[in-house]
Structures are given as C-alpha cells and as structure tokens.
Image 1 (spheres, rainbow, N blue to C red):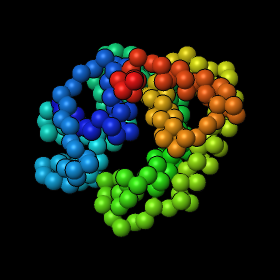
Image 2 (image 1 turned 30 degrees about the vertical axis):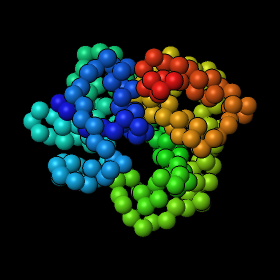
Image 3 (image 1 turned 135 degrees about the vertical axis):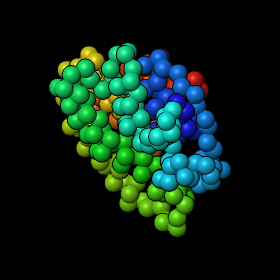
Image 4 (image 1 turned 60 degrees about the horizontal axis):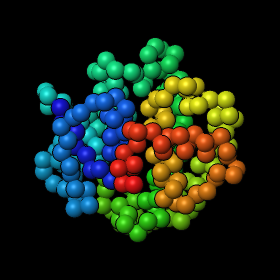
Amino acid sequence: MKLYTFAPAANALRVDMFLREKKLKLQTISVNVREDELFKEPYNSMNPFNCIPFLELENGTIITETISICRYLDEQSNSSKLFGNDAEERAIIDMWNRRIELDGFLPLLHSVRNKTSFFKGKVVPGTRTSITQSPEIVERGIEMFDILLNRIEPHLSKNKFLLGDKFSIADITSHFMFNLSNMLKIDFGQTYKNVYRWKSDLEKRPSNPLLDND
C-alpha cells in the first residue's frame, strides 16, 4: 500500500496520528500541494477530487477521504480498534466523530480557509477558483464551534475521552479541530474548562505529530 500525503495538511495529520496510535507503518509519497502537484498526472487521475491524503491499495484501488482511509486500515489491523470493537461502540464512535466533524472541524477548516491569505483562490479544498474569501464564513465557523463546545462540556465533565476512558478516532478528529481553533486564536479555557482539559490531554499524547515541531 502507498499513502499519498502532505505532512502539514490537517487531514494528512489526522491520518498520521491514527497510524502512530495503531503503530502502523506505510510507504508514504509526499505530494507538494503548495506547488499544485495534485492537479498534475498521475495524481489528478488517481484522485480527481485533488485532495490529500489518499491510499493506493496493492490491487490499484484508490481510497480517498481521511475517515475512509483510517476505517479501512483499522479493519485490516489486529491492534486496538479506534473505530470500536462491537456494533454499539462503532455506532457511538461514529456518532461522536460526525458531531465533531460537522459542527467543529469542518466549520473551523472553512474559517481558516476564508481568513488566511494563503488560501485566496483555494477556499474550496481541492480547487483553484475565483471564489472570494468570506468574513461571514469565518465568523459562522467560530460560532458553530462555540455551540459544539457548549454541548459537549457536560459530557467531558464525566468522561476522559468522548467514549469514556477509551481513546478513538473521534478524539483524533477533535485534536485537529482544536489545532484549527489555535490557528484562529480562539481562547475558551475559562468558559469550557472540561473541554480544555481534554484538549490539553490530546495535545500531550505521544502520537501527536505536532509534537515533532516542538
């Protein structure tokens, strides 16, 4: 298998942390997103959505989308399951991961892409367009993030992770949601103390690839 990636990207980092938690090693090929390599061959034909990461199986099948890649690798591995060990766990982890992605990670991702000058002409992932950056989208993403934190604060007062004491893919998604909030300089430590404790715990995990830069 070959993993096509670009280390600084948020979704590439999610897969990296997943692999470290699972203690899995894959052949990786770095694709320079900043030089628009994804729009060139063979990458454009391999993944016409022009996003990283994507996984090439030995039979040539291409799997794109972060969670799809991680789910495939989790099912192929005999190590501790980050997507759950039975139907109930899998459903609850999927529930939390969707909540975090839809209400936090993706809104903040679009906030960053609409705020940072680097993303001018690139506000939609995997494209180069004339769509202009929108301050309203920046603010909406931050507001949605605050609503999410308010909802999960009581849950984190009684749970170490989203699934009680068990670390899961939903916590990995959450960690990089928080990294996006750092980019936007969102300070919520005094308002959501239980969420902030959880955020700090995630940042300290040995599998956190961002520690490599410290």
